[in-house]
Every structure is written in structure tokens, then in C-alpha cells.
Length: 141
Image: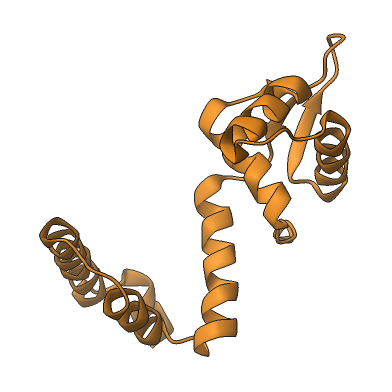
């Protein structure tokens, strides 16, 4: 039985997840301080606590309450969350077309030679993967 993917995080929840992915497990105070630094404005401690409590209910974070200060850690992986968000964005904004997404991204801003080289390497790797026969495909024929 496969586990359902976690819900899409809100912008505030995603900001907290970024702090946890970057710094690892942290107390509410440490997370709140990081958010205040990122925003260059004071973030209310109780606001951060409430968002973390909602995230705990949703399964986006885990809480270790063995000590007096509760320590929160991300319960979702960064790459999986980015993939989920990107899939939803591509479906909603580009009708599911990766080509339209790439064309918009590359056509709307200056792309460095290094970035273009990385994109070419990625495309080459994808092409190699797609041309390699999958042994599972032979079983279905």
C-alpha cells in the first residue's frame, strides 16, 4: 500500500521547511530567528509556533519533545517537495508541458554560458537514459 504524498506546503510552511533543510533540526526559537533574518523583519514567535503545529498535523514536520524545548525536523525531503510543487506548477501554468516551461524560463532572462553548458549536459544525460533499453519493458511485450 503506497503512502499518500504530503499536502502541498503553503508559502510560510515552505519557508520554514527551507530553514530546516538548510540548518537541520531546530527549536521554534532558532527557526523564528532564521525567518526574521531571511525576511529582514521581525517574525512573531507565536506565529512561527502555530505554523509549526499545523505543519506537524499535516505531516510536514516531526517534533521531538524529549527536552523542555521542542525540536522540529523536516518530515519531507527537499527534492521530493520541489518535485511535487514543480509538477503542480507545470500542470497549472503550462498545461503540463515541460517544453513551454523551459522555453519561458530561458526566453525571459539572460542565461550564462555556464548555465547553458549545464543544461546541455542535462539534456545529454536524459537522452542517454531514454535510449538505454529498460529490461522491465521487455517483460511486458
